Length: 361
Image (tube, rainbow, N blue to C red; front, side, top):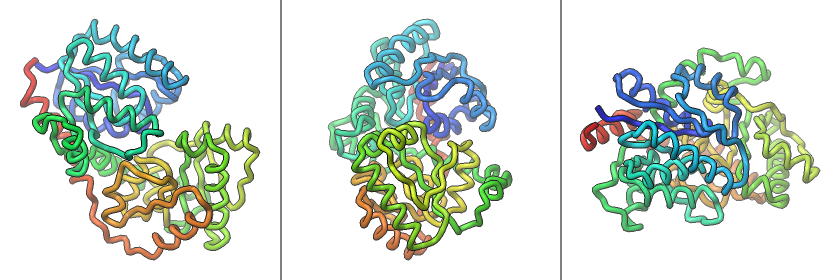
């Protein structure tokens, strides 16, 4: 039997790996979950796993937050020790975090196969630490699970062997299909926030290149102020701890924005599904908005999810106030009739099929 290690470290990774973990659990696979402990406390994530009905990780590396070098190094050293004990046949990593890169590097140095879930995404912006992580992980991996044909093209253009690439769809679709009905049935988050369906805007801003630069962050907040004045609708911002810290440091003013604490995934999915429009700098939120057919304005100058723009679900606004208002106007006029480019919700099945067909335990 093939022995599989699933390594995760952040909430988006847990969400996107959840459909794979669920199938591993139901299929009686030999596997274990390794949690790096990047960003969030393990106790908070224990509750998160429980809400998503997932088994608890077998290992927690407790690396905590730090510089990119510190996080990556701690995960690399601690993951290597676990892999030497467990001797998995393949390590599955997801996305573009420091956990992703460190997990892949620890495995490949021990001659363990690496499978990269959501391979081939490119923003073509090397200033993003995530872009470096993506590129390096792709070139370390033995199995590249590309969500779309465009992602496959990116990999081929970098000289990666086509036989390593498998277009599977994106597990975010599996996750949304798995959880949306549960989220909507819960339903009380709109009541708690005194919101009505399709009558508010949802905002997320957390990326380093936005919140760590005063000019960009203040530009975004000014743009949201202009949107608020024009549309007179609540703008809900579940604020990331990093962003909250920067607002205080930079002494930024928030007008027309309702700050709330970070939300449980199911509550956030409910808010996404019922929003009139989403403004974000998150890659995962761009995908979820597209899948849920909610218009999206991306508060960046590039995106590694160009498929959302191609189908008309998303638009790049950058961080200038006037552009944010203008692009909000554009997206609110668009019909919500685009096709979902990320697959049919069976990506996790295809990923495990590839592993079963190619690896012998």
